[in-house]
Image 1 (cartoon, rainbow, N blue to C red):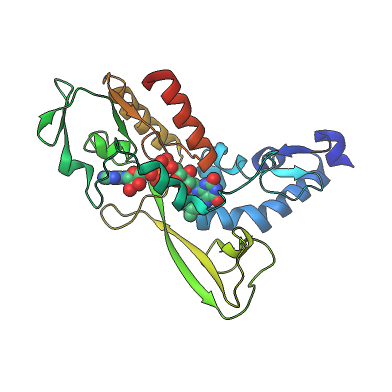
Image 2 (cartoon, helix red, strand yellow):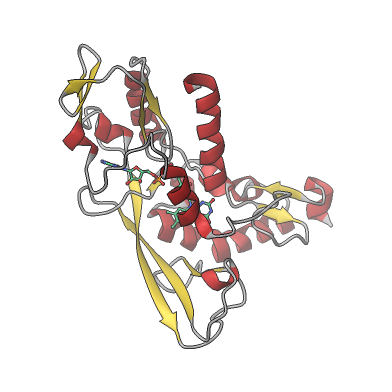
Length: 267
Ligand SMILES: Cc1cc2nc3c(=O)[nH]c(=O)nc-3n(C[C@H](O)[C@H](O)[C@H](O)COP(=O)(O)OP(=O)(O)OC[C@H]3O[C@@H](n4cnc5c(N)ncnc54)[C@H](O)[C@@H]3O)c2cc1C
């Protein structure tokens, strides 16, 4: 009752806000949730304590004061009927699109940082360049390395029809993995076996790992801002995505962002 009186039913409260509660009972509750759900998970996922990471990160998983146990509450929720691979295959199957795989951008692209000229395969390129890689790598790490978090993704095939009851089950306190995803719940498939994925977070090591997540701290934001300022000096350079904008985007966010950028600056 106290919780509802203070925050109202159906509201979402960031854990760091709840922890600042003065009321003893609410404080007890906040500490309980923090200890059981947040602290170990955050350390496992980010390698940092919740206090050392920007509040926007822990705020992504708010405490919901309601009986709605969905993670996303969007009105419409769906995955592509034939999966994401088919969507991208069909989009990329266009005569104007040429795909070059297994090629680092530095093999085909170079930038003269003084004159702001961009070269593609040795020739000056005057069109618009859309870059989705790491912004610090684009500028040869001149302001230092931005921190990223990586993952070991381990798939397992299990000899039974279902492994767990939900598509994703989080393990905040036990084991080295953070969560197990069972895809059968998302793309309904009939099979006697099932495939699960365990995610083991780890520090990102350049040239060894895939950078999956930007790590938001005060210092990393400051470094990012310097790169952003540098990028803004280029008229034809468009940076989009998790790595290029150093933002935490979900699929829907990044699609929305791409459409916005297209409407504003490309069309
Ligand atoms: C484990 C995991 C689970 C996720 N689950 C969900 C989910 O359930 N729902 C959801 O909505 N979102 C989810 N996401 C987020 C989703 O994957 C991202 O929102 C989306 O991929 C972001 O798109 P992007 O274009 O910004 O980056 P990316 O998809 O990472 O694309 C960047 C591209 O740039 C390329 N690139 C990078 N560096 C170079 C280089 N040096 N040279 C050449 N190419 C380069 C990469 O190969 C990559 O193809 C998840 C992410 C992870 C890591």
